[in-house]
Image (tube, rainbow, N blue to C red; front, top):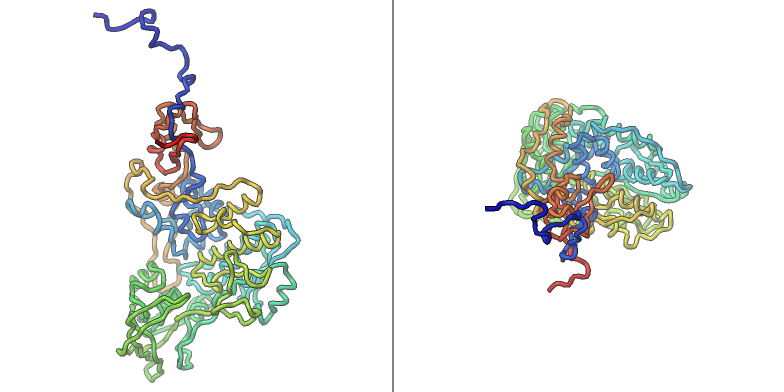
Length: 578
């Protein structure tokens, strides 16, 4: 029985001498694959107020290119070494990997990228005759100065403190943010050409009107420099505000304490003050707050660290009266039955029941802060804050504002507000409208803004708005084996102010970065190229792939095998659904 044919015997209707590439089968397609990753964004990026391109930065770090990863962070903010330490990292809460095993340690990787990717700054040329004056050298003021300097403006920053940094230098304890980290960030800004004039208080040493005469535009970021006081608080050196206490500790290295310390308040200042008091020699520290312990406004990680260090929390109590006695200070509290958020503050419903705490050797009160805005003209302020629009614009043309004085909360939100103001100032000075701009540069609908996108628009480049979030369902988990999150290195001392959270070593940082899904990012894995049954995926020169539509049948295999959701299927043009 014959089991094979020779070439001459094979039926000719089954033989073709032509290359299969000449057989165009694309007409069979009713939908086509597209590489639409420029319009997609990872959930972590949308959750980051600074809009850091985390997916791409971690991909670069996973390849050992910490230098390029740091450059990417610097496109959006000047402080990766600072936010890598003190940011409350909402990116990790939004991380897709948290729904699979454990969220990526993005915060720790950011500081590692800053540590291993340092490159010298090159000062940009001053391209414009206009100058910008900035009141306040905290995170908002320095961020606005940074972006305006990169855009080509001469910038001068005025601050009442002896050195720049605001709360970064004069408030946040050194165990969280060592002074050399802030000094490095300040030096980099100076290398860019930002001028700092310190020891000058806007409003007393230099007037608002004088600043207006000196500069074409102003950015106001005075922060919240005044502590709210408790009614009836006795005048005694043993009762001090949280801000004053933290400033004294940063200025002097330590403030000698002993015995029992009561801290009033449940925010970050209160927790920082409590942990600092322990390091200053207090025998015991108790935080007294009106909220339930699990709902304190302080960062949960900082609260957990305080509890681990032995600090106690007495919750659901509100101070009613403070008395000084022979044994120290006692505080009478009223029990809190309910807490309600009201605008930028809280309201409390108290009951009849009272509680007494003390006697304590020292009392630190951190029940809120206020801005000193008396130097501003009427019409700029509202409810104790500077009123401003989406790009920091105030009621007075040419005057912009940001940071805590406009109602932001914490360092990274101050950075976000300053970025918006930098865009607003640039558009104001160049005479450009901001109508429709936010939609073009936001990451997601109404999300944080991308300075990279803004600079591209400014250069006349075509920018694809990032409008589609990549959820976990679009990640092909077959390509990502479960892996534990890296163990973060820590130091355990509560006797000094040495840094508590340490930097990952380079090997551990690269390994943790490799856990990242790189959601929505084409990282040239080549799956689309390898799995296409029609060889319809072509590699471009340099970077990226494209679809050969003459041969693509629209089978969607490439989209199914894309690990990161960087591709989508879209209806074929001119094809009507039945």
